[in-house]
Image (cartoon, rainbow, N blue to C red; front, side, top):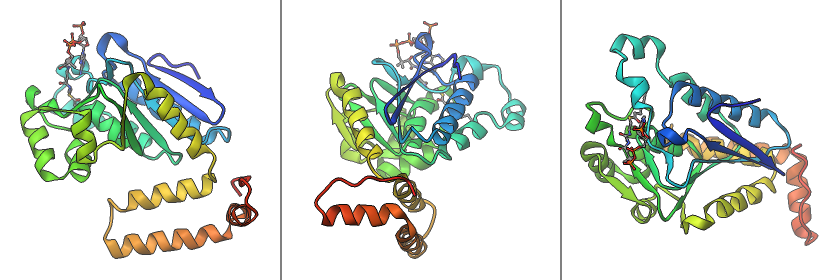
Length: 258
Ligand code: CO8
């Protein structure tokens, strides 16, 4: 499909989606979020794709939701359309692993979009923030929830209430990002991680992703039960037989997603 706000490339098992609104620092508007939800749905349906890298430009992953698009809207407008909500849910419903490769600004909705991904690899130039408070509003695409779960109340409140940015080093220390790499290595590192993920069985990848995400939704006892059942369920797969046999035979597994 042709997109106007995304550049989508597939190389081997990895789909790279680049946000592409350079004149607006990749600000998220309705078109972009709808196209992104479509691209991710297509990736989920394409059996050749096993992992996704979502990135922006060197200067900005995304500098937030599009303030120009939002500036004229009333409560009735955003409430009745439930602005961005359906596409955000679509993005989060992606079953294949998504890595956010963040360089430069990831602000407001941009930070929230990065947090919708499964993990974030940050360039040493990355800056994360929830500056909506400066606009007389507040986070609206998960920032008050996912940021708090990722970095804890103290830092989340600090960022959400003051609007200050967190650099890559602080973001790694706080647990918001999984790795920080030199900016010039960002795509290489993120793609290598995606390729490595792509070597696993898609069945176990999707089950593992569901189980980790369940940790944010439920109690420890329920989460442990969910994990155990998912683990046990994977014993019904050919890939489990292959994976364990390959280990014992000291060879690489050939997973077939069955
Ligand atoms: N929306 C629209 N346009 C933007 C945005 C944005 N969020 N960010 C930058 N731009 C545009 C600028 O207007 C400018 O365009 P133009 O050249 O036409 O004037 C262009 O991008 C370049 O930006 P700057 O000239 O400002 O670049 P600087 O390097 O000077 O500054 C900053 C970079 C610091 C990133 C600055 O652009 C900035 O502060 N941007 C806004 C950051 C922000 O406030 N983000 C939060 C937005 S609100 C939000 O995300 C809400 C999410 C929840 C929505 C939920 C709906 C239910």
